[in-house]
Image (cartoon, rainbow, N blue to C red; front, top):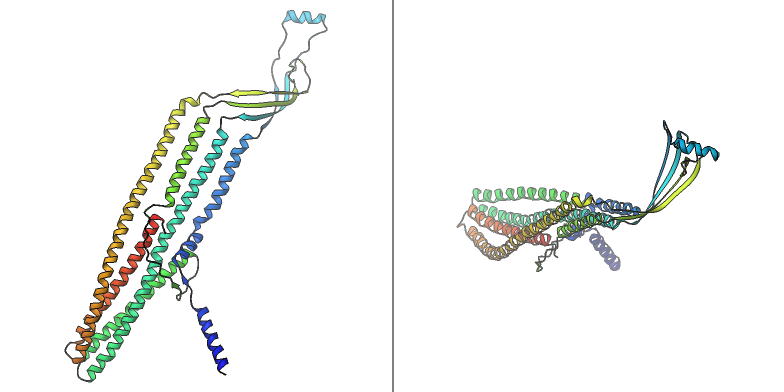
Length: 426
């Protein structure tokens, strides 16, 4: 029988353990929020677009084929001078061209050397994809800051609920004592009412804290794309401060990608200054063919090598280079501004953390003294030397000191994680 009872207890303990809500870490929320954020869908689209653009650039190395046809009628054709016509009579006559002409041609052009233009266009497509990917990473990283605000809002509400419950238990315990003192003539109804009013306020605050927690919990559910019930527990993050001062924000990679993109554009402008070398072939069928004096439908072809050099690009090359250089300088200024503002934010948050550390030291002493004062007041109340209102003043002062400590702890913890967000250091 004892063995059966032992197994029943063990089974109930395991069931309770399995049914207890698992704790969710802030790192898990970061990951799920980024995976749930709609902008993440852009990654696949960016990669596909980049591949299409590179593929299109590479097709510039393939033969370019043009098919064309024509039919025409002209009012006159070429005739030999009359003197040559008379001489031609001795040899049997000269053919006359038709006034209607017909033909179909296939032109094939193959690039042999383009001055590096196709290579530059492929690099431009690659760099443009990197810029778009960098912008997406910046957008995703920004979700972490929103998670911070909601996550620590829930932790603060949890701490306030816990402290409010302790406060309420203390009030109810004193309510029983003061009610007993009233029966013994050491207190009056006003003393009892003073304690009861604070009990009602504590219950009122309970509703406020629960409502705030529920609102934050719904926001977190929306962020991570997962329904969280009211029993979910959030794991309080570590309060270890970061020691690294290096800034590793994704914005910096995005600035680098923009500069690489403009450098790729610069290579394209240089390729425009160089000549092009290509092979060509034209095949056709028509009347007349290459022999204009033979009035017959015949096939024909022409093949050769062509060198072209567009010197007109020299007119705009300097302005294009200057424009690209200005764009690069603009990105560098944006990077410098971003780093400047980020360092200011780092200094501010470090000072805030230092402030909270000092405040928490005072909070501990204040709470210790307030507890001592409250205990003394309870003793005085038992002796009938102070009123219920005086007792409640000391109890509320202790409660306020506890609330201040909770607030400072959560503010410090959130500031630490905001600093980690600012620098992207763990």
